[in-house]
Length: 245
Image (cartoon, rainbow, N blue to C red):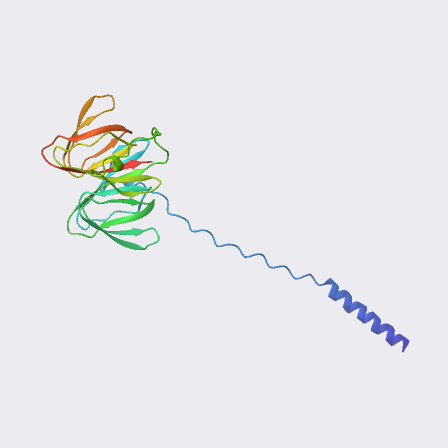
């Protein structure tokens, strides 16, 4: 009996030693987060598609593009920074983004739209050509205005209407009848897109005067400053002014 008891004790000790020798179960590794989607690389439309996109001006504040599409024409994938598009013709377009989603856009001639940075393919869905002036915005601020400079939408609301404003731009629609003039007012660095032929006399703060002429569809960068415009043409004129912040 003592011998049997000793054998049982020895067997128990052996089984206990086996159980202690078993390796601890490995802890599960934490789940890895799914990789962030890779954004499409920026592609300059004037390089990828020069038939539809041409540079008209490039400085430290903006790049101005002239965009033209024939009926049914389509581009390739390309990118724009934050921009303002001024439509010189009616346009019906389909925009396809980098993820494959599509959006249709219908715009009337003379409209100006702010568009956040984007990558897309454009296609003209209309049976007529369309033309757009696109003002691509660059980072950085222009010269600071002096205190209490006159805002044209306040001192001359009859000629100047703000259609859109955010932290990057203010879009004004400016319309004068034949012979009409304004009062002295201030604009920051701006881009003018002329919807009609334009002939204006500018009176400057120092008392000097200068004439400025432009044709319908022209685009012009205008440095910050004060002036008093007068329409010296025989007919009305209208333009879109994109004030830069």
